[in-house]
Length: 123
Ligand code: FES
View 1 (cartoon, rainbow, N blue to C red):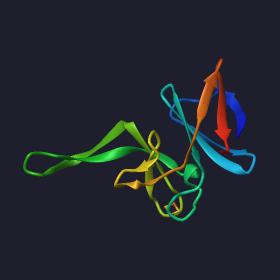
View 2 (view 1 turned 90 degrees about the vertical axis):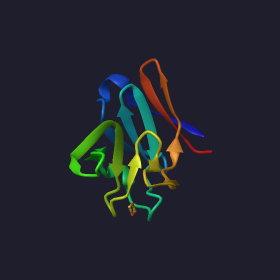
View 3 (view 1 turned 180 degrees about the vertical axis):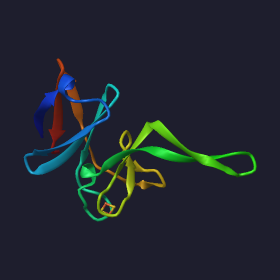
């Protein structure tokens, strides 16, 4: 198990991500609000570089009681990363695919100490 310092909280903009090579492991680190999440940059679908995809708020169809659509609603509290290879989406906070929770990203622990961000890699 190895701990890698990847930067400081203050230099990591809210709502963004960065990809790091930490030893043999490529890791995507995301900041949503004051929380940080780290995911192995290997898509569970076919191994694509999922963390290099784009971030999108989850989209909901705005339906009335008669199921008529009134456009789309964007849930900015629920941000997904979209894999650039085939477009599967994963919730940045949980790592899970919204339609099938069995399909999920591989998490890595993140520690914040004195404003420094560390990611733990390995067993
Ligand atoms: S490899 Fe990521 S969606 Fe297929």
